[in-house]
Image (cartoon, rainbow, N blue to C red; front, side, top):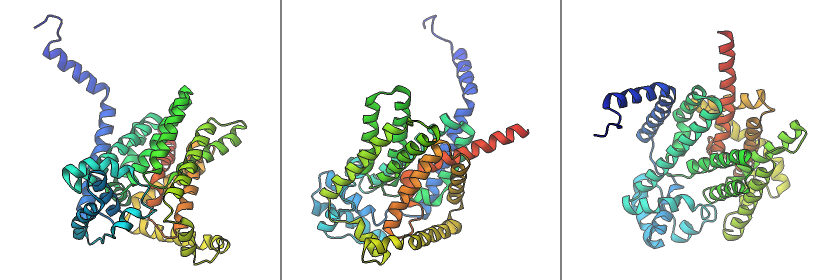
Length: 380
């Protein structure tokens, strides 16, 4: 053995020193990942992985993995029968304009599905949700500290609704991850002012657009951060260029999808749910529809997900108390974007349509908790 090599006792002391120095970080990650594991296991024990929307993503994953559309449909039927989920014919399964653009998740799951069957899609979503959890936690740790990060992420991981939407064979967790990555790329642009980071911002929005048509949520968040930041700062806000990139990319993707996949009309859905014959009548029905959606969702939260309700309340409190901060502006814009999708869809969705903007609720809730912890520290 070389005389320059550290001895076993010295390596052990070094390891103990490292653990002692980083004990807070280690404990933070153990709590967050442990609560994630508990929440996921509880979800698996109570609910299936497979939902009506899942049939489209599974069929596409089979197709992208090399199966013909007919074969992909038959394989999807074999799996969906156990969940009593009917599978439409080939034209509807692969030609419905609402889900046709949602190609990113099936593309990511194509190889796992080919290797492991339908649960390859569930495994892909599990990995995505785990990455989302890690990204959320790291954002919170860096901006608010370990204590706030642990508290907020326990709320996220313990939520019945969030684990259902994020853990099932659905696109929500990937969509939420894209939004968080858009924020990370934007903060990197703030530091470096590199035009390449704006390209990365745009690419994350493109990825989100072809995961789920929810990009007006992140666009609304960024535009509101720009406008209110400029108003309060009395100058062009640093959110300006990222907001223009995000909004421009979101609109461009939406127009492209409308041209390429015209078989679904959000306007027709809006008119149908509003029971209206014209846009004017439908707009007049918006307050009634919004009240019905809020009432339905609130009833769901009170009945089976107080954890998510508490997270939402903390976020709304943070938005009001710290309205001059960008986190509050982002949340307000995200809420407006979510309302656009939710009201035009016309039905309560138990926070599902808000999941792509989950990071904005998380950040605003963290503001509230940090303020509370500082007040406690000043008293003690």
